[in-house]
Length: 104
Image (cartoon, rainbow, N blue to C red; front, side, top):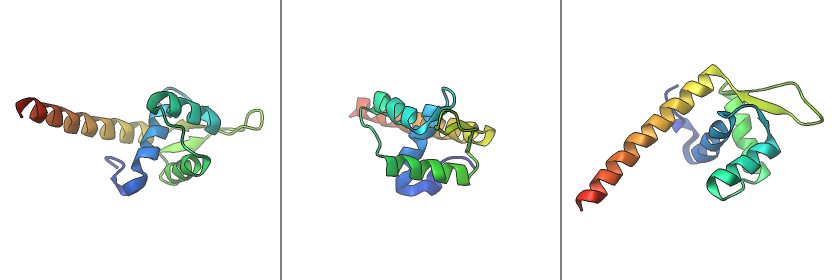
């Protein structure tokens, strides 16, 4: 998989979960806090856990053993590669857009 395009309109929550987990394993509530710190917007539980479920189904993240009644998740090697590919794609799009704005 080279990116998150198959997520369609759900790609942003999935991307934010991957970005959050790039720092290390986290449980859902910690991901919500981290995503809020990154974006200024806290995802709701339905959005967050829907993205987590889809990412698990694609083996981009995996659950770790439960700790203190919380279920942490971590990136898999495939998840790290997908995140790298998507962020590189985004960098290219942003660079092109910024260059074009500078010319106009």
